[in-house]
Image (cartoon, rainbow, N blue to C red):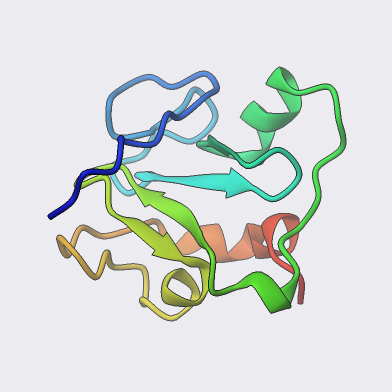
Amino acid sequence: MHDQKEAAVHGHTVDDETRCVHYRSQKDIIAIKFYCCQTYFPCYECHDEFENHPRQVWPKTLFHQKAILCGVCKHELTINEYLNCRSTCPNCNSQFNPGCQLHYHLYFEK
């Protein structure tokens, strides 16, 4: 049974599937929990606009932590699951934006 409260997403969201004013295509449906503040944001730009501290990337040793939220089904993925999901939610099969890979260095240690 799933009795965990749904994760809150902060930032300039424009809908209930975690799209924001910066990234709002059909496939922009994930939010990322930032390592530095343990808060979900749709993107790094939202984080930088709402927080007064520098971003910190997730260390590889913590890639087993849940830090990605599917905006469609609200399933939380571990970083490893996300990095290996081929831009598809393993829970609901919604398609994530494959272009997000270009920003991995902003969120995850190489």
